Length: 331
Image (cartoon, rainbow, N blue to C red; front, side, top):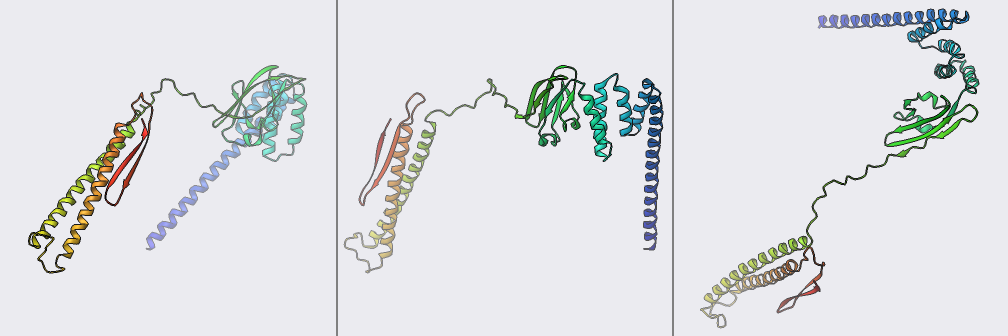
C-alpha cells in the first residue's frame, strides 16, 4: 500500500512537471511571436514614415502573420490608401472589427476613417436581417466570392463601378439579386430568403400498378362466401349431433317419444341438450346461408374495369320460423 501511494505521488509530480514544461514552452513561443511581430511592425513603420511603402508592406504583412494586430493593419491601410483605396478600405474594416473585439478605444476613429474613404469609392449597400447574420450556415457571395460576416453589420461594400451579382444561401433557402456599385448613387438590396423550390416530379417515374376496378369487392365476396360455407358446415355438424341425441332419446323411450316409457323426468336434460343443439344448427345454417348468398352477390356483381360501379344493399330478415335475405341495388 505504501508503494502504491509513493508511485501515485510520483506520477502526479511528473504530470505537473510536464504541464509546466509545456505551458512554459507555449509561453515562450507566444512571446517569440509577439516580439517578432513588434520588431517587424517597427521596421515597417519606419519605412512608412520615410515614404518607402513598397518595402514597408512586406514587413507589415509578416508582422500580421506573426501576430494579428490593429496597428499593423492601420499602417497597411495607410500604404494602400493612395494606390489601392478599395484595399485600404477593406483593411480598415478588418482593423475596426478586431478593435471592437479587443475593446480597443481606437474603433471609433477607425470607423470614421473608413467612412471618409468610402465616400470616394463605388459602393453598394446590402441589408441583411440580424437573424440571418447570426445563422452559422448563412453565406453571402459577391460575384461568386464569399464575404466575411463583419461586412454585413454595416452592409456597405466597395467594388468596381458597375453591376455585381449577389447570392445568399442558407439551409433550404436561397436569394439572389443584381446591384450596381456607384460613387454618387450606390445601389441597394435587401436579402429576403425564400425556400428552395422542390424539384418537379420525374416524368419517367414508374407509378405503382393500380388495383383493378372491382377486385376489392370480389375479394370481399369470396371472404364472406367462405364464412358462409363454414357456417353451413357448422350447422350440419350441430344437426347431426341433434339427430343423434333425438335417436338416443327415442331409444330410451322405447322407440316412441310420444308414448315414452322412461321414468318421468329422467330424460329432461337430454331433451334440453337436443333442443339447444338443434337451435345452434338452425342458427348456423341461417347465418351460413346469408353469408354465402351475400358473398356470391358481392362477387358476381363486382364491376369490371369498363363497367360502372354499382350500389348494393343486402338486408337479412330473420323471423321466428323462417329466415330470408333481401338484395337491393343497381349494377
